[in-house]
Structure formats: C-alpha cells, structure tokens
Length: 125
Image (tube, rainbow, N blue to C red; front, side):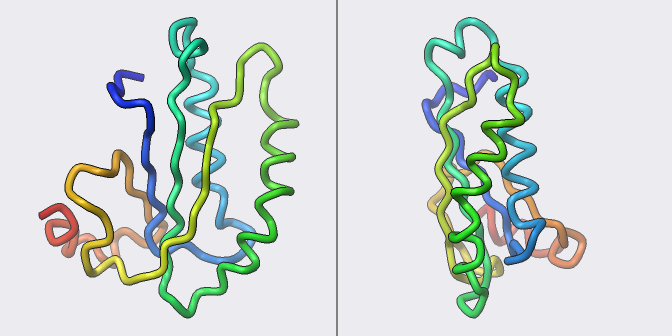
C-alpha cells in the first residue's frame, strides 16, 4: 500500500496455460482489494499483470478464459470494497534474458522459482 506510483506491475514468470494460470493474479487482486483503506479507495492502484511464457506456450487458452475469470473474481469480491482495476497481458520470451526495463516491475512470481533461482541476478541488472 506504500506504492508511490499509480500502477503496480506484477509478472508471472514461466506461467502455465492451464487451470492454475490465473491463480497468482487472483491472489494479488484479493490481497490488494482486501487491504485497501479509505485513501486508496478514492484513488486505487491499478494492477498490470504480465504472464510470461516461451513463445510456444498456448496463450490462446489463457486469453479465452479471461472474461470468465473477471466475472468469477468480481462475484467473489466483497461488496463493500471496490475491486482494484487490473489488466492482463501475455509476454512471450525466456526469463533467462531481460524482459523488462530497469525498475519497471514491483513483483515477480514463479511456481518453479528454485529451478532458476541462481539466474535472478541476471534479471535485476
């Protein structure tokens, strides 16, 4: 909540294209929606999610499921707190190379983080 920018960027590195693809996204939305205070309700932080996978990843399934995901997360959200605005985009490429400009992302996630843990310094240079 101490973010001093109007947009929070979160990235799922090496995301899948199955049922669990949007699990990370839903958890971030839930936490930010739940922890909002009066000040942030007037000017909510917008969320930009990037789902990263290799170019061969089938993002078509993910994109087709976004409308249903939005309906589902809206239905589960508490009525007395606004749902933070969020945007989801696919980003093909290997996370072993630089994918983003310096200091442009606030949160990285990977379900397989131990697999590439030793490569993290390369991402942050």
